[in-house]
Image (cartoon, rainbow, N blue to C red):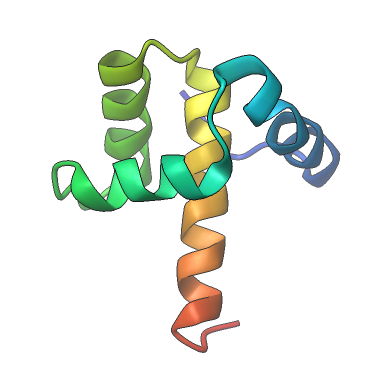
Length: 77
């Protein structure tokens, strides 16, 4: 499974997350932060999909967005 969506696909997936999953992004970010500590994004996406019943596309998009926000919080560009 690739975690690389086009920017357009990523934007569309993230916009639909609350409607599809019933949870807002901050809730998903908290679930990732509180979940197991995986080194690879693919492992986090697989865990998120398996643990919360998400499709891998949405799980990957959430993990990608989480990483983007985390880098921004840490001052990385």
